[in-house]
Figure 1 (tube, each protein chain N blue to C red):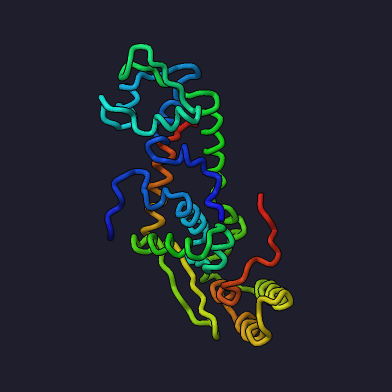
Figure 2 (cartoon, rainbow over the protein chains, first blue to last red; figure 1 turned 90 degrees about the vertical axis):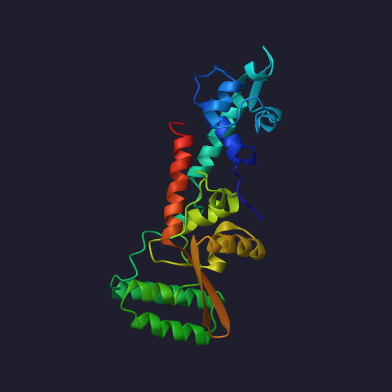
Length: 168
Length: 102
């Protein structure tokens, strides 16, 4: 099972807020703990929730120069790279949504070419063992009688895309 | 209409598995549905896992599901509701605000 490579260290809301706040600083700049708490909506005067995990992962660096609240927190190079990967992963989230290429709205009228394409796909699914012969003929009847794209997609509703054009 | 969650990063959507589900469903044209098996293929969750997450989303009225009998087998299809689409919009906006310019 894969729940996706969304870096769990960053994905946690508290930690995401910290890392996003730090990432907006110019490279090399740091924030005091108090300032970081104010900017991420955490209460002052307490340990920063999420910060220990980020430090341990080497994503942020805390310099305890003047002690607790005045300590300076900054994003490390590693943390910046991890955030960049995280954002790239977010951008590509819908993994195979590209498959559903701009399908026409269900109410749009279907033409002969549309019906033929679905009929051909059903034949392919039958050949690959996804449909029994009875199912195939019932669906072919429905396909050839379909007047809208909604009816067509209903005929192929639970079948994977046989052509799988990929995307990009 | 149900209230949206107060947390800008809606925890109902933020959980990675549910984020994938919602992001996949939001990419469908309005009114289209996806079968359970197809969704499972696309997301790569076990059926048990997927059911639990879908139930959570359905309880919040973010998705709707429909079970239809098709001969001997029953087919479950799911779709994003208008409410869910709106919640996802708010979620991505919150993320964008958070990661703005990065």
